[in-house]
Image 1: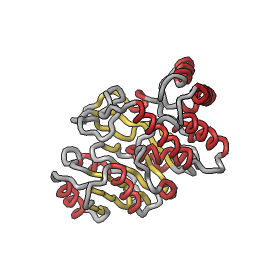
Image 2: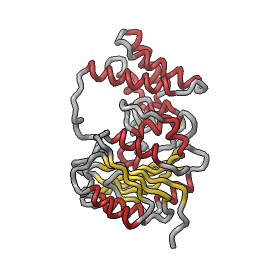
Image 3: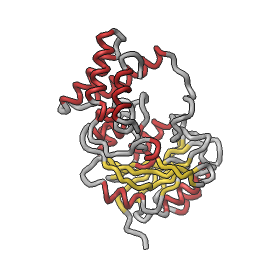
Image 4: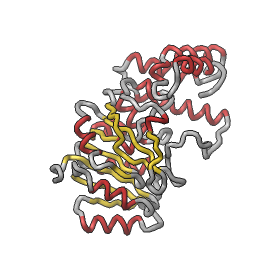
Length: 307
């Protein structure tokens, strides 16, 4: 017997997703904690995605389908869906994964006073076959207790998140310099700890059309020059520094100093950046699977190169 419907909005962003969409929607409909509404924002699909969505909507009143007039890209697409969501809690869904039946139930039970909770995920191939690898095998999946843990990256993916509506309001408008789930996580750590459930609750499908996949070993699709990399780092660090609330005095000061250190590659700035990363290495590198020695070496190399 299903649990009562809970005050959760599921937001799905779609774009040419006909190939894997049905298994994902079926897994959402099979949740032991049923969501109150399912919002789907389609980003101008050219395949049968909309026909599939309309078929489900004709059978279930919880579906709200929004069709974009122009292509917004995945960040703006998710942002639009999150703004439309009306429930106190919001879960994001990709168009190609499979949720385990107790995903929403488990996250709902663990969110407590936190703005955000997320879980581990099991990787599967395009056909849904287990790859015998979890997201936590690739990088550390952890409870994030400081916004400094988001300085250079994080490993809390949107497909495994459940968040409170107030977090979305704090995140608006979503910047394009970072992914939507990175931004949600960073902003959440500015106000509360991110809770982590050490249990796979999603089958995270890996295939050639992933907008963002888990394969961290593949070559980046876009090659950036040194000046382009520096520009992107400056933009990201400025973004984090400016968003960090003034009441987080020490963390905001650290982010400011890192941002300032990237304004040039003078010996003074290189030394400053290296010493900051060394001092806070256990926070900044918490998500990376690095030994104590490798964390030290990572910090030292910042005297010589961009990262």
